[in-house]
Image (spheres, rainbow, N blue to C red):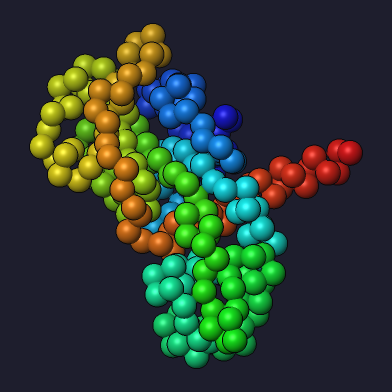
Length: 232
């Protein structure tokens, strides 16, 4: 997988670590069925993870045709199961007209069902992104890396930090890693990357961020498919 960068990486030792990690992503995290994408420096929530590895259901591409802000609506319907238009208006706090138009677009994208005026998320859209893995890369400041990785865990299924081997070996048993559920990757001078601490898979906590990433994934693959169609 190539990396799509949303901000140009800064030259320096951390970039070399990041490049080493990206080369080893296929062996560290084997691709799932569906669409697989790697993105760098995505602005999401209060952070900008160094790397995100995202595996998604191909149906996510339908969001590339939805021209309305939809992450909060999808997240709300995921949380409550189903709701009527007036309830969605009260919770999301947009105009009824805008929400109605957004729901129509989501219905056309087969992300939302309308059952006699009650809207619900289509089942496959509850887990449209099968896996989100975040990775923070640091040369020495492992405490800062852990802080950032912990923040990433609100939208990622797994969150890792990548450090030089000497640093990773020294801190891999730090209690805070277990407490907040962060894994550790060790990068040696030759560019080899080892997983020295795994992290359990967890459900994201902030679903609007999850669906914002779904939208970014949709736009990425939508643009890619459009380019293929134009070439033919």
